[in-house]
Structures are given as C-alpha cells and as structure tokens.
Length: 185
Image 1: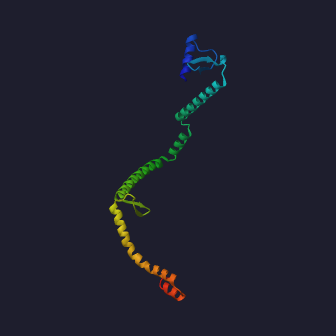
Image 2 (image 1 turned 90 degrees about the vertical axis):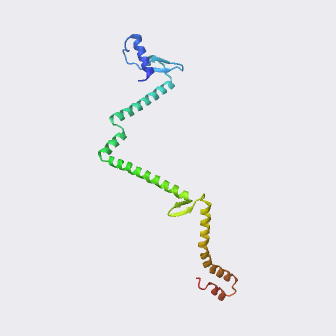
Image 3 (image 1 turned 120 degrees about the horizontal axis):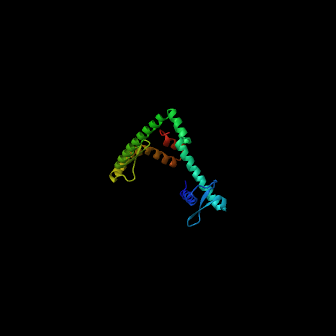
C-alpha cells in the first residue's frame, strides 16, 4: 500500500478510534509542500488530479499483474518455458550453451591466429595472403624483389605481342600485317 495512504488511514483511525463506517477512498493529494488527506465524498477533484490518480492506479495494476504472473506462472514466458521443458527442449538449450562455448573458444583461437599472422606482416582472406600496410620494410622489399623476378620471364614472353602490335601499325600491306600476327593468333 502507498505509504502516504497508510499514514492517512492510521491518522484517521487514531482520530476517531475506528475505521470509517462506509467505504471511502482516501487520497493523498500533493499540495506542493506536503500531503493532505481527505475523502472522495468531500473532495472536489480537478482533471489533473484525476489524471495523476488514474496513472498511479494503472502503474499499480501493471506491477500487481507482473507480480501475480511471476508468482503463479501465468505469464506467457512462464507458460512457454513450462511447455518447452515438458517437450524436452531443455536438452537443446544446454546443447546450445555448450556449442556457444565452443564457438567462443574457436573465435578466441582464430583471433590469436590472426594476431600471429599480422605480427609476421600478413593478412589472410578467402585463402589468399596479402601484405599488411604496416608490414616490416624488409618484408615489403623482399615481396617487391620476388615479384620483379617472377615478372621478368612473363615480360620476355609478352614482348612478341608488343612487336606484333608495332608491326601492324607500320605495315603498308595486308601481307606485312599477316606476317606480323603469324603464330600469335
């Protein structure tokens, strides 16, 4: 029960020694400085006071409903949980907890692995390595050196196409053009 309402009822009981003979609603109305107690039968209540009282009662109703549902198992959540346990769903919940733990462990191991790879100067995505932007300079230089080495035979092999393209541009007859592309296409 509301403490101001309790104080009002106990004050009313102490004043005349007994509870009121007929049912009256006692209200604690905020006067701005203190609470004053009166009965509904002698009170003129304005719209703002009615709104506050109705809001207060709605809140009390919600709280009582939640308490009763929790206590009596009458909430939708309680019904679903009870039915889930009856149907054997609890084993899946425990299995899910176990799998979630394994997933976390694997994610931790993967993060550790990624950190080790980054420390070497590499990233890894979709089965391919890439050089990190902050890779050690020696590693970046070695990558560039090996890349140029690997490109050298490729460039040498492609020179014949460059020569053929140049010959096409300087050819004056169809026969010269045909000789330029022989063996390439």
